[in-house]
Amino acid sequence: MKDMLIKNKPRASKRSDWVLNTTGIGMVALSLMVVLALRISRGDTPTLGEWGVLAGIPVSALIGMLLFPRWVDAVKIFFLAVITGAVLGFPYYTLSALCAGIVVFVAPVLQKCDEWERAVVLRLGRFYRVRGPGVFFLIPLLDRIAQRIDMRIRVSDFSTQETLSLDSVTMQVDALCFWLVWDAEKAALEVENYEQAVILSSKTALRNAVSSTDLTTFLRDSRVIERKLQATVDEKTTEWGITIQHIEITDIQIPEGLQDSLARLAQAEREKKSRILLAEAEIDIANRLADAAAVYAHDMNALKLKTLSILNEGLKAGNSMMLVPNEITEELKDGSIFGLQALAELHKKE
Image (cartoon, rainbow, N blue to C red; front, side, top):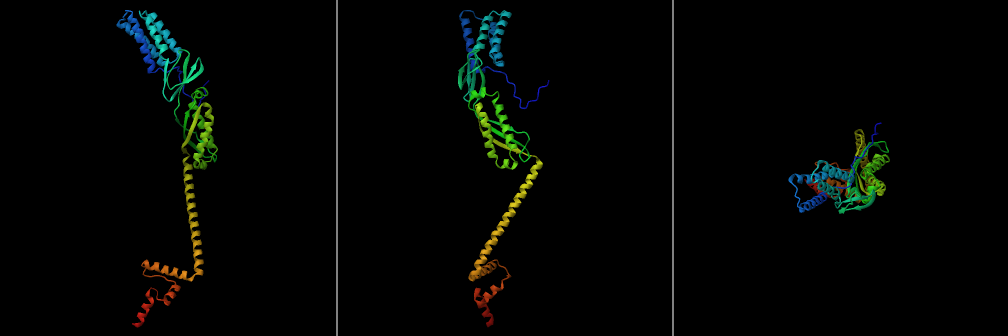
């Protein structure tokens, strides 16, 4: 029977009871030097070939531990070294087995975590404590590191599959999730793969938000939707010792045909608003003119001043010919406005 296809299948990871670092390797080198010094102090100096055997078996054990960092495998490597020395009949096989045993049981004892790391330690399969940062010790065969957890803020990018919005628009949304682990014990014990759980929970919440919101609201109120997503996912992940600091929508993809339709709709909306503004401006102008007419109807002097200002503006423009209302010409005949009356008298004398 074929296995069912599982989306987002987690990667298979080997179990690791410890991390063999430079500190552990240094301890192994120091222990080997002590053993060899004790052997030489007894007056039994190994030959060059025996030196190679004495160093080769522990180094082989060390390489095996790097490849298989588990207590069970370490014990197997130790017995394999003893059996190999016995079968091959090395003169120093006992010492070689002792060196291999030192490598197996001493190297993993001293462990180290960086400032931003925490190590969840199990003792005989049960939770013991969270260790780190700094140096700590493991009891051989009893303690093991279940998981090393990074306590820094992490950023995970994810996207939803094509989802229908509330107004039946196909959308694909990309987002970023900023989160961190605040309780290493809960993150290691409450959920199998907390990083994958955070991403899948965020994707589910985002897909639900898309399907329950129309496109216009989603575009207009994206910040509000982001805060709702953060609260929804954080409520679920708090039980795992994880907090969601922020979810940010980075991209919204819709079909090209719909993009053209939305562009035409936006252009029509802008044209509609411009026409409305123009009509409102005409109404304001008409109301102002009506107010001015009411003032001029009750004050003839103001009307005369207005007519003269119109004539003055025309003269400033330098027009060679002006169309002037009859009312203005009648006013000009009665007085000496602009010296026209004096000009007329000069013409009579001639």
